[in-house]
Image 1 (cartoon, rainbow, N blue to C red):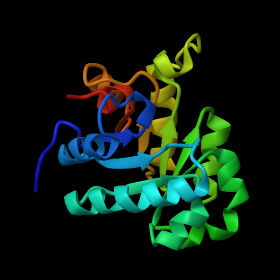
Image 2: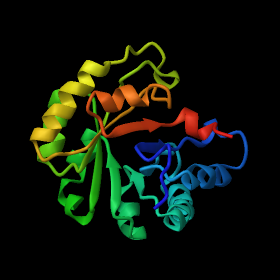
Image 3: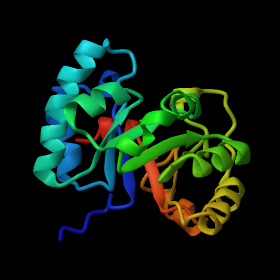
Image 4: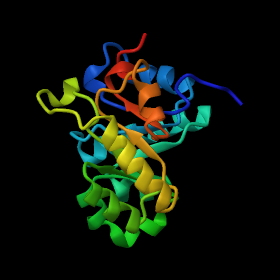
Length: 194
């Protein structure tokens, strides 16, 4: 088994941050064996997203990295992808289909969000926003005490892993893990990585 410095990191894609060829960047990121990859690309049409997802799923499969499609549960079902990442409203929208997936990742921003997600099938929580980030300028991060609170709750309610998002870098990832998260999510760092 390959041990990676990104083994506790979920890579979040954003093709607008990639300087060169997008699929080459995905190959580079996945070659570092992160915990998983979430194919975000929310602005694509369903047709374009499906085409891209087919390519990214192949890349991830080659390296044995789980790939989560972002919100597009119909496309995930069509492509046979058993991992889905949802917003809380997305979880409510596709509650009838949740059983079709092995892994259900849910974005949460409050204890109430987490309680709902854990009661309705979430197998992992993406918890944000922890530190201030370029993606959400001016939004104050919730901080490590929030991570501690939610990680503790999730341990007691199904031992569901928590991954922090928002300003996560290799430098602050250890503090997030020390606060009880399984790891963190990185977008900018990985999409710009050489």
